[in-house]
Length: 322
Image (cartoon, rainbow, N blue to C red; front, top):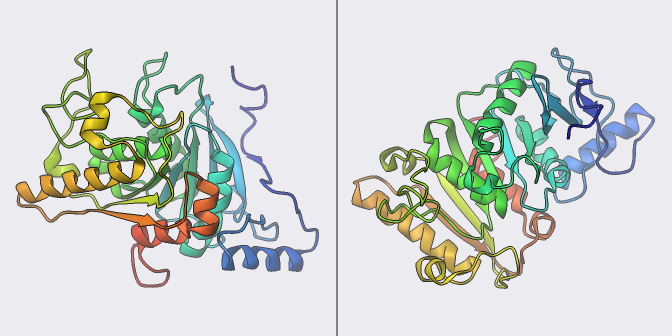
């Protein structure tokens, strides 16, 4: 059920303690957060609001005006959002949307991109990882489009193609969104997904591209999705199963029994599928030593934020997309 305050427009939320009263101190704290992206971000209070009325330099909690049941976080960099790319970060099943938005905000500031973090609730988006439709008949992919269209209208950011990242369950959503909607994705990065949709039309969705048991599946075009750059990150110590790693005999035979093995097999399958069609392989993988299945640890100790933004945008100031 929607909270009573969802329709009141944007609602600034300080994700971590530490409002600073003086403008100078706020500016210094903001610069420190940008210089040390793995740290918990400090929200700047001295930056002027954008032309749209959304303050810059703050993580804001919003609900879609036309549908208050859809919540998201947004961060507009100090230089504003006009013409900026949109970076989307998708949480896992722990629904740690504030952590995603807060820890990625300094990178959005550094690169001058508008950050969007959708909040896929357990009630409204139970199967969001698989793009399943909810009780209202809408899939999480459709709801993401609704959110980014509102953000583009509010900030002037460009919405032609998106730059996507997801972790764990969010990584499942992101790679399946990319396979189903390659025309909407400029580049994608995924962190530690539990399992994948393989580029095999003989295997039913969501394990492959074929129709599922209910004869429904997204429409896939390998000639298009194999052209999208995708970078997969997984922690080298992410070897335990746990309740969040789907296991069954068929899945284990297809993909392996750990996230490390599944990453290797999926990257190899995607590259082989591209080569078989005469395309340059665009999918790559990276295993980062010492990192387990923790988004916060990966960000703070494994340099995930820098890895993701370099994969999507190149080095800051290198003349890339931003």
